[in-house]
Image (cartoon, rainbow, N blue to C red; front, side):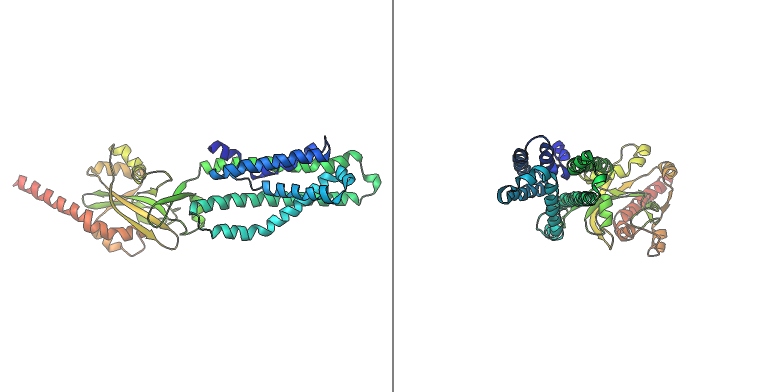
Length: 385
């Protein structure tokens, strides 16, 4: 089904019934060409009516269908057979532009209605994406057809001596077909390039207020919409002898750039477990220590004017100081004691995450760690005595 979806994401393919009509009009009577194209259009709409259960749409079929319906009025009521025999491509193009103008009129209210619907967020996002793609293609067809019609109008005011029979055919019949095929090809190339970029994109799960995954969105898109989406992240605190190993965040970090924080943090990706994300966050450290399992300490919601994150805070203990010295070569940092941290809290040195988490760390893990260290020192002292 994914292959079918990728093949029919090109909304420009919905113009195929009209292109078939204009192509057949060059070889058979306009009446037969219209009949075949109308049947093809209706069958296509029926197929996509079935495929809509799988969220596969071809909205461009509707303007094509309406254009053929308007053309039917010329056939039934106007009785202009001689005109249709010669100017079917021109009449069809004018009707198509009229329909696309109506599409432009309904664009804003339709998008507004979809945004305000009660559907799940992921479904609304998908529908809005498909509709925006359709409106983009409709506008492109409309602009090119208007330019073509203006070109025909300009050509008609030229002196007869400047006109050529072969160019007449190209201008009235062939050029509109070329425009249609070119737009379909352009849209297919654009989608292939877009899919290539999306493969490199980082996809994040979208959570509801209960913490359940309800969809996904590209990281780059989420960044453009501050605090609109709720994403899970993992953070891992490294503890050594009651001290925390801290390092500078990247200068390109979206939050608390260049401030002091744990060296291990990352987004949980779509369809990735939180535990797997935590393991991935400490991947470089694992090359030095071998197998190591972060332990979940607390999960909470962090929210400010930029972001809304479900934070899963893990801890790992490293007793071998040589491992830390080796890790410094990978990411420069240092061990901070509780006293050093407390002296610098609230001074804009630490990340906003760390400022919130430290009090809990101090009164749980670090407190337990200090007791263990005291007991160990007492045991060693007793052995010496």
